[in-house]
Amino acid sequence: MQTSDSAREILIRAVKGTRDLLPPSTAVWNHVEAVARRVFEAYNYHEIRTPILEDTQLFARGVGQETDIVTKEMYTFEDRDGASVTLRPEATASVMRAYIEHRLDQRPGVQKLYYMGPMFRRERPQKGRYRQFYQIGVEAIGSESPVVDAEVIEMVVELFSRVGLENFTLLLNSVGCQNCRPAYIELLREELAKVAPTLCEDCQRRAQTNPLRVLDCKVPEDQPAIDQLPSILDHLCEICRPHFETVQRLLKHRGVQFEIRPRLVRGLDYYMRTTFEVVHGALGAQNAVLGGGRYDGLAEALGSKIPAPGIGFSIGEDRLVMTLEDRISVPSLDLFIAALGDAAVERAGLLARDLRRGSYSVEVGFDGKLKRSMELANKLGSRYTLIVGEDELARGRYTLKHMASGIQEQLAPEEIAQRLRAKE
RNA sequence: GUGGGUGUAGCUCAGCUGGUAGAGCGCUGGAUUGUGGUUCCAGUGGCCGAGGGUUCAAAUCCCUCCACCCACCCCA
Image (cartoon, rainbow, N blue to C red; front, side):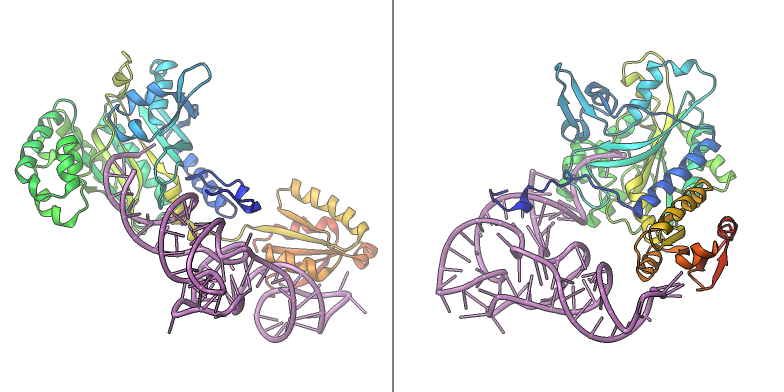
């Protein structure tokens, strides 16, 4: 920015890629989080809160040294004592760290944990992608069983239904394990070598660096060639194939709709076997609202000798909220008290306090003009307006107006709560 | 990191073959001294993103920055 003495230029703004969440849309965030907690608890998941700041090594090892996330997209800095710390770019590694650190493997049963909160990734912001973004996720650690996979995935669908998301699609795949995936990648490499020259520039590079990524290519001209590439599902090993089949069978049995996508690959190294994703139209290029999968090798990658097979997912809360936001309704206010004059303000204060103790939402208007108060009550979307003026104080009965119908009645103070209890 | 788009009133935007700014919504006041929503009238509000250049004259043309947005790369 050029130097200037203009006052506007020194205004401090939110850091690039971060944003303020304001009412009324924070109501949608709270709604999503409240429903998530309710659903998770019903499946016996419990909340875990891990630090936002972690040792950089956690992500370097857990997420994969070679990934873009680690090489250039982390918020990493040196602490005063010289230690390298990083703002978490995701939560799975942290949860696994906590699992190992606190020996949660010694606790009975599968450890079912959920979390929600901000993550950080330093990249160019775009629609549905921010540098500080929010995720809601779960991890079920301690079992390799496909039964857990099916339950986790069922819960995903349950959650999205209950939160009010419409027109979403659950995509499912298996990416094999350390036994079958290397062989498949080798095969893929060979096949790619034959067709590579006809593919787009990016794919030619991917064919070398990360062959699985070619399957994700969005260039239309490349699709015919990509369709001819071998599918990983035809090359699963004796453990992965039945595992995947069981997951599918259990999901069908529970009536969970899904689509098999052999080309659904995961970017992170630690995923194996089951992977899944939920996409939603009308989200632009960033159309995935949830991504998840099994990560049986993660604990070992972190250097742990404690076996900790797990499966989990995380929801892109920013994106989910985005799809729900057009349905925001004005915040509800039960009662607006129009207090006319000092004496009325005092009485209104006491009345408001008592009603608020009864969990009614109440606002007190202290503008002396009734017209002003009525306007404000209307703008705030109040169901009722209570007029407390000289007449009312003299009579000891206040005027309660139902805003939608315009009907007014005179009530003693103790009768008001009862009126508010009515649905409309 | 790469490409494209957009920056004008609190918000959404028009004006851009150069002549120093408009609309709708919002906000404020009034019609209605104790009655909102609809309607009508009036008012408030802009160094036209920043800096420089061309010109008698720049929101408008040129250059450079900056910011935001969208997409790519990559992906949690």
